Image (cartoon, rainbow, N blue to C red; front, side, top):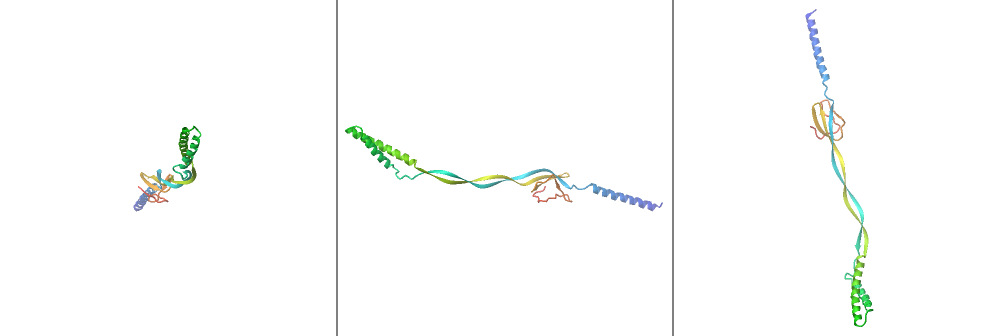
Length: 183
């Protein structure tokens, strides 16, 4: 056989094996297609919503008093007490009983008028309102910890991811939503 033919076949075989080895290693070392989700922590905020709460309240008022010194009750009581006191005793004792009856009647009339004035009230209904707050927890995003190979990172996502996040051809996260932070 021709030495150059044998040498050519040998070199060609070595070249083919080299190409096959390089091609084989390329196919066996695929970059990962997904990042593994390790932890998901919802990030919440408290929203306070004000609303007005109203109720009707009964209020009692004292009517205006026209006779602050209660003279009418005192005078009527004194007259009635004097007439009643005049019925007792005789002579000088009758005069003392009349004066004592007038004094006692005046005091009793004054007190009776005071009691009537204090109980002379009327009622109105007033609407009283106040602002109260309802608190609500809202999720504003998710703090997602992921792992690609030996590397770990954290991003903030607007939606809750599944167990994996897809990667593009360069090994970067493919996110349908924009991220806030990446480490």
